[in-house]
Length: 232
Image (cartoon, rainbow, N blue to C red):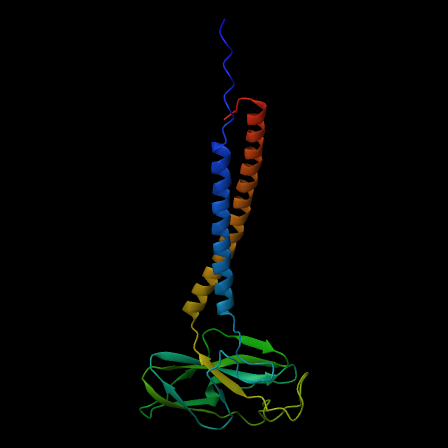
């Protein structure tokens, strides 16, 4: 009389592949989200000004109305100018034609509106981009902002804000930053949005695969203990 053939142990190969595949997709989703969020943050106009109306860490310098400023440029760079106003009472009034830029050769440099309009609010102050110019040649550039009649900036109309007193250092009227362009902005926007979409989709898919794989794995282990044949 032949002995009965013992049941084939339930295989856990399939559940393991599904589970680890899900974990891999989850990790890819996390990486995509980090890239997307980091790119989005890098495109935001942060640290342009401080809560005291002073130049932030992203600003190259402060500019005073009707006073010459000498910029030493390595050439091949562009620069953006940002008007600073006390929020919400200040009224923005500077335009590209209020800015004069003289290059190292003594010729005027074209001043245009910024390709990508930006604004940044911190505390009781707000900065808004209004002009841009390119420093094609290396050397010293002379910049003068001459506002029109009736212009009032925070340095001359400072009434104090929350956390500041009237005897605090006067806020600046404008700051200068490195230039931005539409192509880099569009690329960054596409990367950030695409990364976030891919990341969320990967997290959903990876989470489903991982949960399904773990459930399958637990079921297979239970069948192994009961001595049932796996249906795999």
